[in-house]
Amino acid sequence: MKDNMLIKNPHAWFGEYPASLQSMLNIENTELAKRNLSHWSFMAEEMTPIWSMNHTAAHLNMGQLWIKDESKRSKLDSFKATGAPFALIRLIQKHFPHLHPSEILKGHYQPLLQNFGVITATDGNHGRALAAAAQSAGCPCTIVLHAHVSQEREDAIAKYGANIVRVSGNYDDSVRKAKQLAESNHWTVVSDTSYPGYQSIPLDVMQGYAVLAMESIAQCPQPPTHVFLQGGVGALAAGVASYYWEKYGAHRPKLIVVEPQQADCLYQSALHAKPMPATGSVDSFMAGLACGETSTIAWEFMQNSIDFFGLITDDEAEATVKQLALGSYGDVPIVAGESGVAGLALLNSFAAQDKLKAMEIDQSSRVLIINTEGATAPSIYQHVTGMSPQQVLDKQTEWLMAN
Image (cartoon, rainbow, N blue to C red):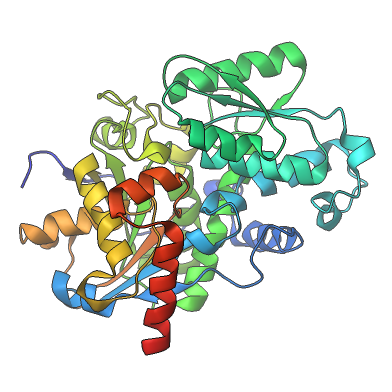
């Protein structure tokens, strides 16, 4: 095994969900998020599918393997459609309490919101979701992109009418620039990462992400014993962990967070028992996980609920994108982007070395992975897989008809 690619969190515990955390993220508000977002035309009418990966599970020598496929969440191709749009609804409600939340993203209040500017920094998917929601609501929107965000991802955001600002440096530099522009222009930052004095909006974003957990519990035939979550700044992991923890208490599943080796801020936070920056270059093939600084509010939820923190290489992620596209081992082909495959990439790495027991996984384990995105950078996807996203979807349709 490569050295230092997994740590067990000594501070994780299986007690009841603390009231202090429940006051910030809770099942009641997750249900509210689901209801509010259901009125947005961008959202799929049904829950995103959970694929049973029976052949892959047998290959990995575990009991069950499920993949919740967020590539089908909306035309935005990622789970981010649950976060920034819900936070935008909540933000507008706070400033205009008389507005009905179900009507905001229908554009019924555009004249009222034409000067209500919002801004965020992004690696791609979060900014795309905010831009689409702001366009639907009628808010001016500015998106700050760092030097490593591709032109393809910029174009996908700009199509929703957002003003694009480019900065040199990495994601964390773009976060600082967004904060500066917001202050000078009297805009509001809608971010999934928090910093001192900025917590309520990231909490709303995280609350939206908890919708994934709510759906997965309804969909899985049995509760998972292990849930793999992408790292980034920690917002997804915190949102999903909060729901499972409140729902199951001491019987919650084991939770594993996965990051790129060079963007290891959450791994480092676990090592030092406090929010820490990444130790590597941060830039990664997994663009959505190329984050160097931990969200402080997310860490409050993660520090006692995430059981393991794992790291993967870009090469492992790339191989897993191709694996899912091909429908390897006879399972359904899935369109999964670079960040979407993180959980399976970690499983592959440890299974290949017969080290799954390090994550307390055995033949009785029921494992849930979230494919957080589809081919949000189609040219990269085609380069890696040799197929367009549509070709993989065609293969998926053929598989479903045959099975």
